[in-house]
Length: 228
Image: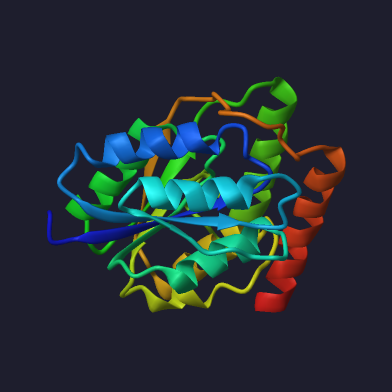
């Protein structure tokens, strides 16, 4: 296992108040498993001191790197990080929501199953409206893209570099996860979903609201039209 090098991409946006604790917890957890790793922090369109904090963390922790993106967008930050990653095993995740044990568990599953995409399947949402919205979105994506997975947006997502079609992701927005799942289906990449029951948010506020949810529903349909 120690011969495998993993690159973990962490988009960070206006998280100066808590990203230091998050990265410190990740490093402590990753140092306990037999896995070579790098954490690629991607500050994007930040309006606070997140980039400066990220560079400080890179100086404190051996396995932390920083690749900045002046423009925002979850998908863009993921793509910038993946382009800079050096590992044979590639991962991206939501740094505001992923607990250290969830990250290490998903990575270890991926090491044990080297030819499989491994991703989280979040079983708990904070409120019934989020549970309903997530269910509707996942049903839409399953129907449009003929998917078997039940949590399209679930992270961490881990895949081997050999699955090169996933390095051709194009979305700059939240629809990158739907595009990821659609590519896996098209290419026949097997997928393993790991149940995750944590719902704790490390800090900051979620940007998901009725407006952004509607854009996701419409965007999934538009993505399907584009990929036909």
